Each structure stands twice: as structure tokens, then as C-alpha cells.
Amino acid sequence: MLNRRNFLTTTAAGVAITVLPFRAGAAGHGANMFKTDSGEMTVHPVEHASMVLETPGGVIYVDPVGGAEAYADLPKAQFVLITHQHADHFDPVTLAAVAPEGVPILTNPAVYEMLDDTLKAQATAIANGESTTLGGMSVDAIPAYNLTEDRLKYHPPGRDNGYILDVDGLTVYIAGDTEDTPEMRALSGIDVAFVPMNLPYTMEVEKAADAVAEFKPTVVYPYHYRGSDIEAFAKLVQDATSDVEVRFGDWYA
Image (cartoon, rainbow, N blue to C red; front, side, top):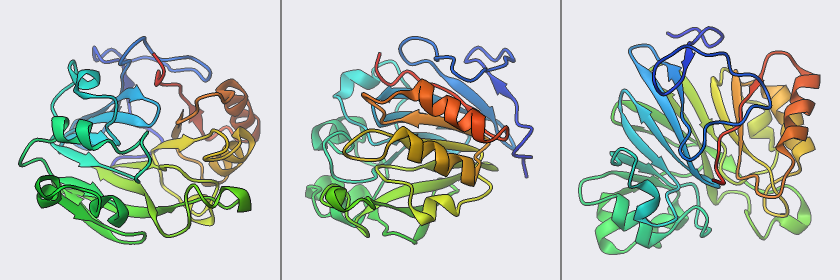
């Protein structure tokens, strides 16, 4: 099993680098690579909450939206993950374009019921607390929901998913749209985390930073952060713990 504190990070060209907090990634689809037990995982930010993960087990599209053209220069999807039904996470037109017949789709039950018959035939739904596999990678569905009373209408408890993936020994947490839930704070052993922060839909940077300082992923990317001060998030995390490295990906090129 990969030592979560000692995996190698490289540029997309494969050259070892030191990534400092507060440094933005490269323009466009700037990528970071993480060593796994038998290869590498490459992270491609796409847009807001959308990303592509190239892994030894296959290419995973996460919440693909923005039209097929947003993915034209990226490797083709071999698997798709969808966290929930909001338009910045689920677009049936984009999904149909990037996930042709034979590409497995994993989603929460609410989105599964919204799929047409063609996409539904490719899809599997898992609810909070359930697990499955994609191409040999284990996937756990983690609750993603709002805690604040006036935000419950956006993401009620029990409906939406975050995901934890075991990517060839690398543990990856994709939080989805959520606040700093007890389930998030109780996590451990996370190598790479993607944590949202924007209002009113998810949480303040202060809450996001406090949660990250508690569950201590090795690396955290703020994402789904439009309008939020991610520099402030990074400083709050840095002030709270030396165990977490904050990285910025360019989701808003």
C-alpha cells in the first residue's frame, strides 16, 4: 500500500516538482500527477465542479457538464461519476456526449431516475453508505448535504453523494456539494481531497478550512469555489495544521 505521506507529485511532463501552497495550477487543463501503487493518477480540472481523473484503472469523468467541447483535448471517459442533480453537476446532453454506449455511469438514486433509457442502461445507482467498484477501484458513497437550516433546500440529507475512491492505493475524496458534515470531519487516511466552498450552496471558507484541518487529507484542492477567497482558505488551513498541503487547480479558465 502506498504511504500516504510520501507519494511523489510530478508535472504532467513527469518532472518532479515542489508545489507550494497558494500557487495556482497551469492555465487551461493544468494537471497534477500523484503516484499510485503501480502508476500515476492525473487530475485535470475542467469547470467549477467538473474534473477528469486519469488513473491506472481507467479515465474517470466527475460531474461532466459544459458540453462535449470542454473535453475535446482530454482522454475519453471510461467511467463517469455523478454526485447529484444540479445543473453544474449533471447535464444529460453533456453526459450523453462523453459517455457513449458501454461507458459505466455511477450516480446517486435521484439522478438515476432522471436518466433516459439509454443512459439508465449504462448506469448504477448507489445511496449514502453504499459501495461498489469501477474497473477494480472501490467506490464508497459519502453523504453530501447542507447543515444550515436555510440551505437545506439545496442539498437535503440523504439525497446526494460524495465519493471516496481507492485509486490503486491512493485514497481520493470528492466531496460533492456539502457543508462540513460529521461524516466529512470523521474521515481519515485521505490522500487527495476535493472540497467545495461557496455560498449559499455549500459552505464558507472558514468552515471548509476547519473541516480540512480536522480530517487532514495529505493534499486538498478547493473546488466549486466561485466567488470564494481560496487564498484565505489556504491560509486558514496552513495556520491550523502543517499536515495538509493546499493546491489550486484552474476550474475557471
